[in-house]
Length: 445
Image (cartoon, rainbow, N blue to C red; front, side, top):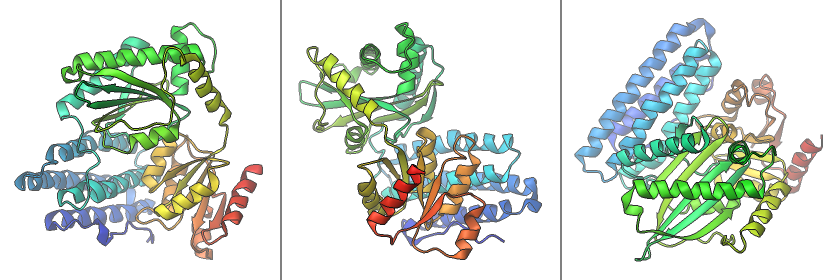
């Protein structure tokens, strides 16, 4: 019997008996599935039936939770139900398809359990706690369901009309994650009564090269000023269509236009809850659109683009983006203190992205593959070994170097992870300069 398990913690309890009881039940089912998946002798049928039982139980729990929210008159009911809907109608079917395609392999079952555990924990700690006022929902300002659906369809239609791309929605709660080498474009609109409407377009660079470049007849495989100018005005056409489709935005006029670094984009994007936050896979690269109705305009630190400075600002932006050839490190740790301290230690010489859970790590890696992962071994629920199993199970990520970060090292831990081929182990108790030296040495080799 495997010693691995998803650990229930008191902080997951929200204080509503019917909800807490069902959350514990879902954890229990996942642990049984985890144990079954460790023994091939248990057979495909056992895991297949167990996953079916988990799904049925989760759907029943969602329905009961929705009844409870309606009974108490919870103001965030519609948004909360919308998140449930996306999980049951999109997330679950997608990973079920993977299970079927791989004939319920151990790796695909691990992936299924990791996704479900990550979603359940994040949802419990934010949206479920918001029911009792113990947390604030990040998505409580989203557009109503019908407007969200209309926005998705409009953007898919525009991507088809403008670029002949067959895009599909990946997420309706894009959280500002980095993907590939990106271009971060911002349009700020204001109204006569001082309302602010900020719009963010995120393009993977290879998407622009293959689409805007094609429209211009360019054979270049590098983003240039002409492609960037074409992109700017295509984005404005997006906004004109969005404004025409949603009449209440017609009173707004363009006030400011910026090209942002990823750091500036992330800071601005996460400071307020978005009304709309969509991530698409176009087949040529990723594309994201976000809209925020702000009380005041966020300061980006970037120059406002105007007719007289557009060429110089675009050249400067492209030069800076091309200069940043630093190696990319994904740091995965559930401690915000550790994430902040190691990021500060490394970000002068490396491009560091931080994730606080295994689920977030897999998502970040899928969007933007790192050159090295620094992975906390002692994370709750999904420990480092389980996360590395999921990484090795993903064909596109399988050979990514991973170094474990650990509070202690022992023979049992080393033996358990040896088959997963980690690139090394670092103690968190190391002096900062020793840890930095170890990372530098890894890349020198």
